[in-house]
Image 1 (cartoon, rainbow, N blue to C red):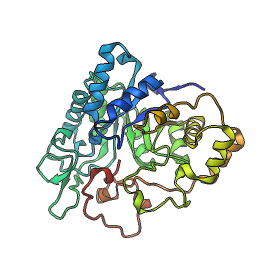
Image 2: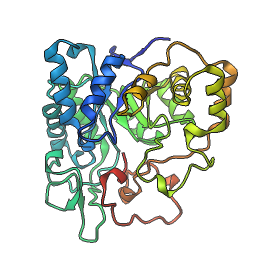
Image 3: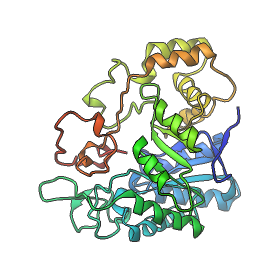
Image 4: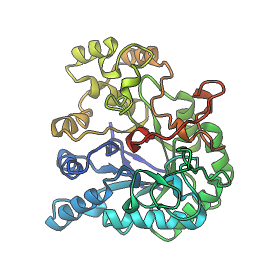
Length: 356
């Protein structure tokens, strides 16, 4: 099986990326080194993860030493929710390029469809704080006086998309895409494209949330589907709220453990092989060097058709990354997954629990 997939731009994107959400500052750089040395050529970043500067310093070191060349890597980053206004889109990317110490990224996606948390008044940057703070303080998670997120309800992602297209024309990103969009929202983007179609959709996806309809939509429209939290994010900060509806963390599901034993592969390798074999890319996160290497060691075996079918029995619609505190925005994508009458409450104090 090929280790890359061709985007609608003609570029090749590696099917397995190193995810960096929740990767702690001080450990992320070494994780990136370990990944590149293990064969990764795709690094997934975002400005609100708070670790892009460390990734940039590591990439610079590797480039200057001659260990890897820029053109050998596929670097992804994301437009933050607070910067959806057309005049704020380019400053957002420029800040990421500065931190990453790059002239361009290979993929730039709208991180979430809703401009929340956001005031819409000025760009928000990681250097001002990737944490909650009062409106006007410049932080990435601005709060109203009642503790709820500020929401720029007049902003809509079509205007944002058109500003993203300009960045492709300027050579600051090679392709643009979407993340956490639902099917209706993806279709709206496609109906309003002027020059550049979405190349990638990055959404939560794993055997407990298989997103078959979204994957079919992407296949029909020539969009590559990339799974974040492809292993079920067992280290999600809000795990204390309970297990998935199956009663097991994904990697401890009995069906996967049985398959793992039969194939002589770890449960994570079984799941990641399932992702790529069904036509999806994946961005597993780890800072543990042995797991980083393990996660890319999936190209030397193949799941049988019967075992691929067995995964259908695991699909239970369990979504862990809701970012429900931003649901007051009309573009929030997962309203159907919220309880009837849900009203967003005060924002969590830690941005690691604010959503991806």
